[in-house]
Length: 441
Image (cartoon, rainbow, N blue to C red):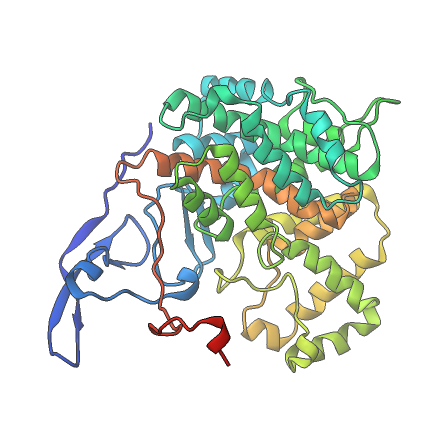
């Protein structure tokens, strides 16, 4: 039974007083409280009442929306989807179970789950004409560039689900995006290596099907490795949603203009492409490439500590988590299982394990709580599976589409929906007269 939405309420007797030192005038701002998390100063009427804005670059102290989907407590290392802890979901659920919870508010019962799996499974094929769309890209195009284009193009093929005010069409679009992103991601990979596209199979699970479409070939049967399929499913679960990050905020602000969901998800993919966001696990392997050998680790870490040559330890620490990344420990177990299963003898993977060992025993990194994050282990697993680094962010997009479309759906169903319109602190020229070009110096 879904929990009812808890309306943000003013905290009784709690206000925040803002005083203008120049005039002595004061204003009392309401303080709101959600179900968990910090109290929030309500500044919605600030400009009307004071003629002033707030200044918060990167929105690090601003709640841009209210949401019931995901909660993060970075100090405690806590991540919950719909109230369920990420560790329990990763250990006991499937990706599509988590997807259902993100979309609808609760984990499904067996009937709901079977119906949802059926709906997603039977939307995995893409329109045949989309195959020709890929031919417009250079063979060496980055897969994320391809994904930005082909996902946006879905709006040109599925006109029957573009009415964002129709609940049924919203749901169909959600199912289509969750189902078709793995197919398009696999097609992007196959196109980049010159292999034929593999059509999805309805007899496979979500993660099994993705691995089949990426690594299967028409010339021979593809054997599903359950260890790899389980690891892939957990990677998808751990990346499914992460509150109001850059790409999710991009999806929401694009959606606030009433753009269609395919365009909004394409916008999210473009935002995710940035190396400071979705490209972090690729940056881990590039760092390992830079280190080169285990013998070079001490010198590399010395440069990190002394901030020499802008040397950074990628895959350690997190913008939000100030203690530990709860997703990392889950993926550490899968990383060990995958490497053992594959018997991988890769110098870079050995280097990563040695780097982890040394960093976790170094007081410098321990004191600063720079522990391995989810990107450190996911990059290692994906490389061991055979994915090139250019595909890492694409796989992130496959997983995060579930969170994006859930956040988009929640926003569209919000009665007080308004187009996003941030303010600015203008620091340019003041008003000045136009000077004809022949009189300008």
